[in-house]
Each structure stands twice: as structure tokens, then as C-alpha cells.
Length: 265
Image (tube, rainbow, N blue to C red; front, top):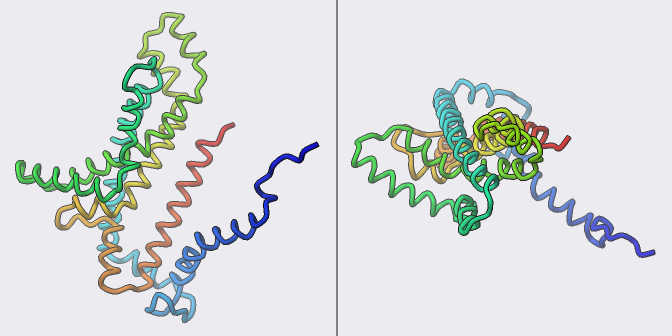
């Protein structure tokens, strides 16, 4: 009897897999290790210390940038998730019609277009609006991030809708429940894991965005990633390593929560 194909048994699979893991995680491990170094040079080890974490926690610029980042990320993720939910419902809970594939591609276009192109387009648009209105607040950043994050929220929500059993929805419709009641009492509770997963993906995408933020922001609107970029251009200290390590920890936590939410039971 022919042996079943297993990629793990193929020649060279193990060393290639190990090399990929090393290439991916070795720089991250080095970053975390040197965030605890007492030396002011980011690549020199001279003893263990938590001083850089203390300095980062007491740095008012870091605190302000972090609060602004969270505010923008939460706001944009809420708007992006709401828009993505309606878009997912419109492309999964309707019969096929001409142009549906084009709409699906249009929704996911930001995933395929280079981010710098989106950033330049948003720069031109927001610059004109700023001139016309005289307003230069963070609303532009929230709107720009929300527009960019919609496809990231859309994918898990659509996947959740496509995997849901329609039996309960059809039974409720047969019992003369209105479409709104079916959505509120059946579709929405079943869809919550996908909505939460979409929100977290949009939140993380907005939180660590640099390109769009740099193009759209006005003076005094530094987020944590843009603050870190500015500091790296001036001088690099292990404080940047400490901030990056905290960022890494938050990302791992969110990814872990995302895994358990989307895990099929």
C-alpha cells in the first residue's frame, strides 16, 4: 500500500523549518534580551537592569503617545468593525448577483495595494479637507486608520458568517420573525466571536501603523510608533528596546486571545 504523503518527511524540511524560525525569532529574542541591558548602547550587554523600563514608564512623551495610540486604535477599530460587519452581511446573506465579486475585491483592495499608495491618497484628501474646514484634529487619523483597517476586520467576520449554520435563521424566519429580530437574537450572538476577532485585528493594525500616521497626522499628534521612529532617527538607547518589548508582549497577548476566540470547539 502506498505511503501517505507527509511534507514533514521530505528531505530538507526540518533544517528549512528551523532556519525559518531562527530568521523570524532570533532578532526578537535579541531585542528582548538587550532591553534589560544596563549599557546605553543597544548592542552591548553590561549587566541586568530594569532601568530602561522605568525611564519609559516615566517618560511623559511616551505616555502621551501611548494614550493617543490607544485612543486612535480603539476608535478606528470600532468604526472599521461596524463597517466590516455590514459589508460581510451584505456579501454573505444575499443571493448572488452581478458585481458581487467586484465588491468583494473592492473591500479587500487595501490588502493588495501598497500602504504607501493608500497613505499618499489619504494625505492629498485630508490636506484639502483641512484647508476647507480649518480642522486639524485626530479625527483624520481615526478616519484614515478605520478605512485602512476595514478589510482586516472583514475577513474573520465573513469567515464566521460563512461557517455558521443557517438552520436557526431559517427556522426563525419560518416562525414569522422579522429580519431585524433574526439578526438581533440569532445571527448577532453567533457572530460575536468573529466580530471580536475582527475588532482585535483592526486594533492591532491601527496600533502599530507608521506609514499612514506619518502622512496624515498634524503637528503634535505623534503616536507611539511614530515617536519611536523619531527617537531612532536621533539616537538609539535601550529605552526603545524596552518600549518594543512591551509592544511585543501586548501583541502576543492579543494574538493568544484571538486564537482562543476563533478556535473551533
